[in-house]
Image 1 (cartoon, rainbow, N blue to C red):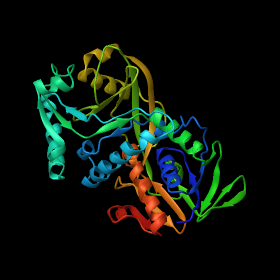
Image 2 (cartoon, rainbow, N blue to C red):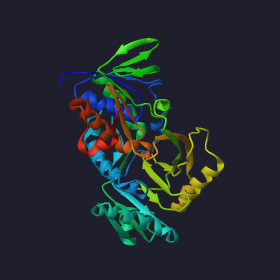
Image 3 (cartoon, one colour):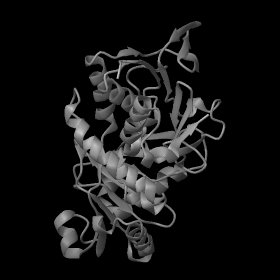
Length: 357
């Protein structure tokens, strides 16, 4: 297949993975991003980086788990090849609940089993729980262990993807607004530029072209403490504020929970902060003494069915709507688009996401 000139618009996790996969297929990539190369304005910068396909079955359909499991394998293959070190762990996920909230864990276990992934889950009693997470064994009588699952640190991954693209010859245009995009061409500062393909990966910035795209607000907090040690992501089930906490290097913990039907980027409210901190305290009381390093809000782009979408209009592709699965699914979407460009159609197992116009 001949080398093609491909423009990728947007340097969030979707755009960066699209650019990397296509570059490694031998194509010449031009990446356009309206923000700086720090990428700290992106939804992707704020994400927790959960790679937990089976946990997602608490809300998502079975295909998300199947696609996510395939994408996790892709991450394991690609991360060691990047130009900078990336923190990634695949030690599984532990799901816990206080006795009165155990229905949530049972529901997840049933969903995992009925979706055909029962071999990837195991109930742990207190002694087994103590082996995996010693600091939680005295607070929870049992836990649901899901493996293989993992997490990846966006703060190390995003710069590594940018640097890999730069070293491998991609043309990177930061602080550059793409004023218009069409099949095989873009407009920058009033000048049209021709490409073989244009990929629109702008997330919520593409709402004008994708009217059923909307934002779902998420709030996430980073804590720092030397008094808590966790070995893997923990999810605590609760009917009002389910919690996840992800251990990161240097005694930091990423804590998140909220999904609010709003595209507001205003700072988090006192109520949201209190609910998040109360849930964290209920998981591990020593977190009461942790320092609050950051509290961020962002909006995840999603469609009404909460599934990603690849919309094609001749040689213009719009890849969007990854919702809360951006880090989980982005490599598989990148591989799907690479196949679409090569074969003029996506793989059969991903055809549901393709909408040619």
